[in-house]
Structure formats: C-alpha cells, structure tokens
Image 1 (cartoon, one colour):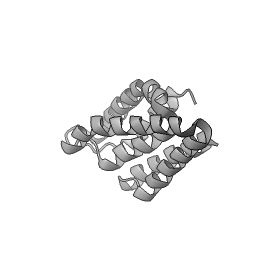
Image 2 (cartoon, rainbow, N blue to C red; image 1 turned 180 degrees about the vertical axis):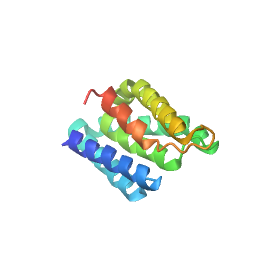
Image 3 (tube, one colour; image 1 turned 45 degrees about the vertical axis):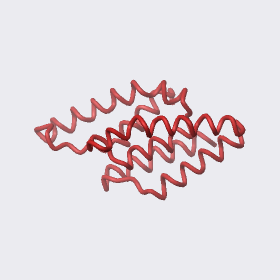
Image 4 (cartoon, helix red, strand yellow; image 1 turned 135 degrees about the vertical axis):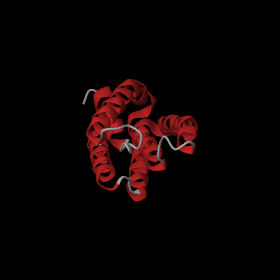
Length: 137
C-alpha cells in the first residue's frame, strides 16, 4: 500500500510540475498526512517522529536554496511529503540518483532550449526519478 501511494504521489506531482510548473498544495498535504498515518500504523510513534525529524532537517537544509531561488517551495514541500514514505534511509540512498537525474534533465533541457541561463527545471521529475532509482523500484 505504501509503495502504491508513493508511486501515485511521484507520478501525479511530476505530471503537474511538467504541465503547470507547480505542484498543488492539496496534493502535498494529502500525501504528507497519508505518509504520517502510515508511519504511525506501521512503525508506531517512534517511526513517525523519525520521519518528522528528517522532514525538519530537509527543510532547514533546503530553505537557503529556496531563499536564493534555486528551488521552489513546492519542490521542497514535495520532497518533505515523500520523506514520510521513504524515511531517512530512503532519502540517503536516493540523494545521488536525485543529483544525477537533476543534471541529466538540466543538460537535456539546456540543449533543447539552446542555453542554460533561463532554465526552469521541474524539480519534482528528477526527485521522483532519483527516489525510484534509489529505492530500486
């Protein structure tokens, strides 16, 4: 059930980001609540607290990127919602695939646009790809 909801979240958010360049806050909120509910039912309070601590750390690390406009708020919120499903271990295994996916998409978009100066990368796509590759799904 957890993987099915996670796959739905990754797919829906990526499609939304590609089409509209934003991810709906209601989608993120529902996914976040579902992830916490699944954590509480399967891992108990301690497991959900671990996920929440990871979410707080990710927010603290990525907020400076938001403040200098390298990442959008929706992308950060999306990643925080995904973490409730994969936990800190899933995040750690997904960081390198997320980085490689980001660079690959940036290169493809830069070549297609014939320049890299005004790229608006839909970051949910490389985040989703990195999570799928990192979790070996």
